[in-house]
Amino acid sequence: MLRFAVLLLLLINGLYYAWSQGLLRAYGFSPTEQREPQRLAQQVRPEAWRLLAPEELRRSESVARVPSKPPECLVAGLFDDERSAALRTALERTLPVGSWTLERSSEPGRWIVYMGKFSSAEAASKKRTELASLNLKPEPIGDPKLEPGLSLGGYDVASDANAALSELVKRGVRTAKVVQLREAVQGSALRLASVDDALRARLDEIRPALGDKPLRPCP
Image (cartoon, rainbow, N blue to C red):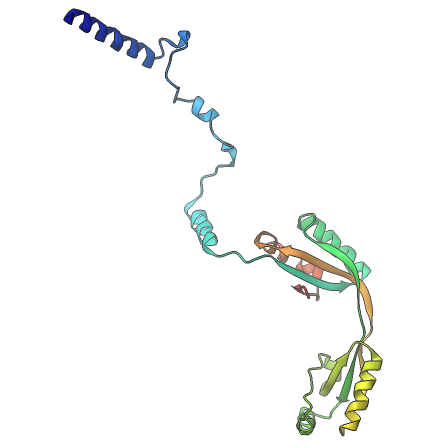
């Protein structure tokens, strides 16, 4: 009985050795291969892996620590036909399709109730004090050609500006007048409906084509 147990143990060990060394592979019995090239075949997109230099690793870690900003909507314009064509070329070359639109739009004219042009900044300041006594607060004009001067309100329609001037006359304002600040214009407006971090990083590439029309939050 003991001899049979020893022979059985030797047989089991021999079979295990043959199985572990792949000697029984022809009969369908062998361990799973863990050597090349089988492991290479199990890799997922090995071409996408790249070893980073220490500097690149530190830079990528610092970027990962910066919280991303939520997407935002930005607009710029208006642009006339010539500048719109140049801007369109820059956008098509730089930004992803569908991330931007150039839409036909218009801006109304602008009229203000204006006082000036004064002989000096001191004269304008004196008039500002007089208006304060009437509970009137002048607004910034935004046009160097009309400085030094004061605006008592801006309007998109000339009739509204004239109506406001009439009310101011009743309150004691005597030297104001209606001045057209700008004419109505038509053109194309740039709209970036959803600017995320990836798109935000590429906006500097189109700024030369924007010229003096900065990107600003959508109204």
